[in-house]
Length: 89
Image (cartoon, rainbow, N blue to C red; front, side, top):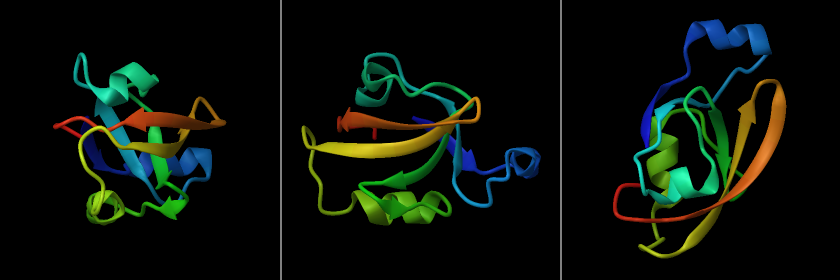
């Protein structure tokens, strides 16, 4: 999953934290779960994600094949997706 710390333009959505998804690798767990370019990831397994470092910390302790719940915002909707971790997540 290609990610970047949330961009200032996201403030229009009244989102103050998270990471903006720039794309999900084809055949990745994120793509299979439905993560899309433009989504804003705000939590992993209910652990808030302020930026990329928080995402890495939230995923520590998991291994390939584990499943996590990713909370994200898409088009002003709050979604929770189950993502099976692969080698690239």
